[in-house]
Amino acid sequence: MNVLVTGGAGFIGSHLCRLLLSQGHDVLVLDDLSTGCYENLDGLEDGKRLRLIVDTVNNAALVDDCVRQSDCVYHLASAVGVRLIIDQPVRTIESIVGGTETVLKACSRYRRPFLLTSTSEVYGKGSKVPFCEDDDCVMGPSSKRRWSYACAKALDEFLALAYWVEMRLPVVVTRLFNTVGPRQTGQYGMVVPNFVRQALRGEPLTVYGDGQQSRCFAHVEDVVGALTRLLECPAARGKVINVGNNEEVTIMGLAERVKQLSGSRSEIQVIPYEKAYGEGFDDMRRRVPCLERAGALIGYRPVRQLDDILRDVIAWERRKLGAGSAV
Ligand code: UDP
Image (cartoon, rainbow, N blue to C red; front, side, top):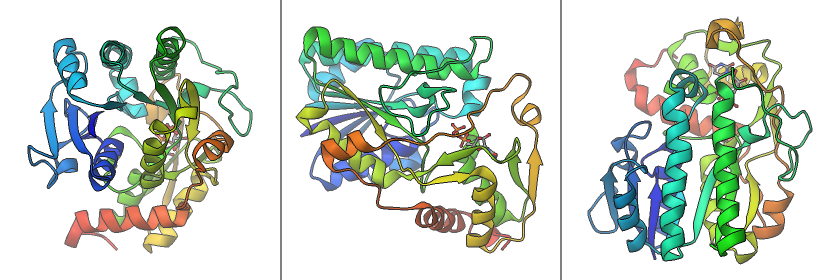
């Protein structure tokens, strides 16, 4: 098949492209290289099996052309990372809402199956454990910029599901929980690459808040495997599906694990949220996915657990740091 991957030069997108190529598909990537980067696709672009177009998903004429050439569409292009979302709220909202609308319109025109990567952020401040797909989304106020991301992604979900209901466009909405692995940049605040880099450089590991907030980290290869199987699964159409890992760890526990697995002597430094993100920041205490729906639809079970994931990221960052590593 000819597959379009928007955001294919990003962290998750580039892993998805590798998987699709290995499955024998030809891949067209549309990416503006804003948070993605060319290095993520290094060695893959050959103008035949993988082609890269550098432009935004807000370019409607181009999106139309790309979708027309493709048999199905994975829509990953999006602003990412809490840091970027707080620093650039206009770009966040416009790229998420406008981009998805443009891609969906073209998919509807040519009847192309569409997969959206939404986010566990849409569950917001809900305190239920675990989060199931039909649970309420509990948003914070619009004065707190972080919530713009969750609201924009929730609107994307509504729109995709509306295309299914009104036009029977085959859409699959996936909600990705914290996804990590090689090639993720710490530049936008993500905790795992940050901690690993800090540990390898012998710098303090910066734990925000009291460190008792928790997350569940999934390996990107488990996640992209689920994405391809979900888009191929007729029963997944018109549904929202959590994708992630349900092994929970506190952020303080994560810092300790990273130190241990990397053999680092770095200190752990606790930093108040206000200092890390500025005034008026809201964090989520716990975020655990219910994976029953993905299990029922495609037999999904994450294969790689936290220690495997951290070892993988540490090995990757070590290679990148080379001789500059502090440990
Ligand atoms: N965090 C941290 N130190 C960092 C970066 C993040 O303690 O250097 C915390 C952050 O406040 C949150 C958790 O780690 O509680 C996960 O943050 P991330 O930005 O990776 O993802 P989120 O789940 O917040 O989208």
